[in-house]
Image 1 (spheres, rainbow, N blue to C red):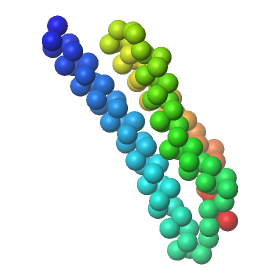
Image 2: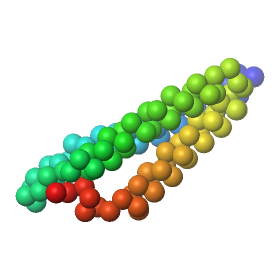
Image 3: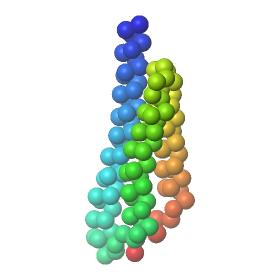
Image 4: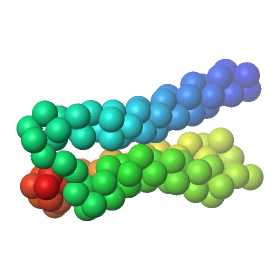
Amino acid sequence: MMGRRIVAWAVAALLTALYVYTVIAAVGNIVLLPQMATSMGLGITGTGWFWLVFGVVLPVVVYALALLIGRGRSAAARLLVIAAGLCLVAAVQLEVLHLVPQSSFFG
């Protein structure tokens, strides 16, 4: 019984760390991309700022929703919902990476 709890908490901590990683990477983009654009003599467009902020907000909102949806369920179901949310965040970030032209960030 105690072993299952430890495993569940360890998996939850790992999934939470992956969400935190996505937020930290997005914050790094918000901080460093404008500096890079300035060094090239460019600026960030409004569309670019939207996508940069979207990258920070999306994992936070999805994680909060996953916690709300998983509330009151078994540990396995809760972890599955959190993992599914992480998959959703990764898929959306990949779509943004491939569908939004990089030229729309700079102006």
